[in-house]
Image (cartoon, rainbow, N blue to C red; front, side, top):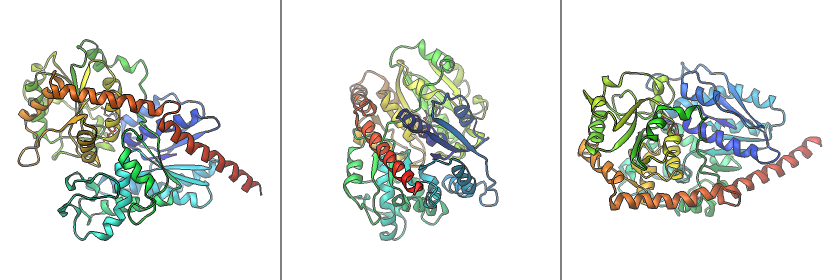
Length: 477
Ligand code: UDP
């Protein structure tokens, strides 16, 4: 298996790898591009107790400085890192003499060409994003041919056969400007799905029935063929060791009443502008609700994913430099501000947590559903706007704050209003809570023996086994 080195991808890759080795007869080598710039990834990989049959192979970093500069977007950057790492990846796979199946990340599709050289008999993609994004990507080559100009100028929502329409405002940000390198890379990755023998997706039938039905029932959604799709989720980060549970957030949560705390976090890379942070701080204060807020140093504009790769996501700064004067004193006892990082899964599964103000990264989305926590949506980048709409309109487990007239800022009064709505004992808040718990129950069953995702993974593993036997016979010949 080959993952890109960002947490949002690595975490589900690890969880899938653990599930695969739990089945009889499978061994997994998870190839991870080594990155010494993300302490969070370092911690994840070094504190994990690996089950028997699973090894992590670190691929040494490559120098891409001649291809990128400080302004290069994340999709281009990651695609170039992957491209430049291919020789090393190939030699690692050659050394894994008996590798027969290759499962790669959405942004590591270049590695599928290695499989063509008989290094591996079967090649698969593991999509750590929703099936809704897969359907959009399968359709993107068609849109690319049929639409003149920019997609953002379309007057109508985008209709993909069998799927719910996608509002132009919700489009994944990689396709907002077709003239830039980011779009070219994204289209390249979208066009290469049919090379794979199948696509495993971190979702389940109960969560995304419409998109999954469309993908399974349409051999061709647009102009390119759809490979078989296997929903194998929701695979979310395993709980940390007991030592991690001694974290100050957990100790603080232990002292708070049930369902009383709002968790505020924008994932591993999301950051806000300085102005938006001030509004959020005042909004939380106005709401008079308890909260834990993971703060990161503000950036010039909202929605940056820039820190996904750098030390920025764990950089220790002084929150007094960017939070309103006296904020930390005034929230004493009611709110807890932590810097850069918090044990999210442990917080969401704590009985005192009653709401999640989230950037709607797909892992965070799954983690809130699996733990039955209603969401206040605050999408920033990638496919997060689609995820937010999905949570609000399809699942009915989230509320969306209104953005101010300038379309840039969510004001403090609005923040206070939505926080109270979710956290207080209101009809709407209780409705969201009941709905998310209902979905939580059905989604959890998907991974149990006999559940839809369990069966789907069993099916693909069975196919792999059969192919391995055929391959062995062929090699003997
Ligand atoms: N995460 C965490 N603590 C933090 C921030 C993030 O444990 O302070 C974890 C979170 O639980 C999730 C992952 O990092 O598993 C973030 O993935 P997601 O897809 O939600 O967002 P991304 O970071 O890729 O934008």
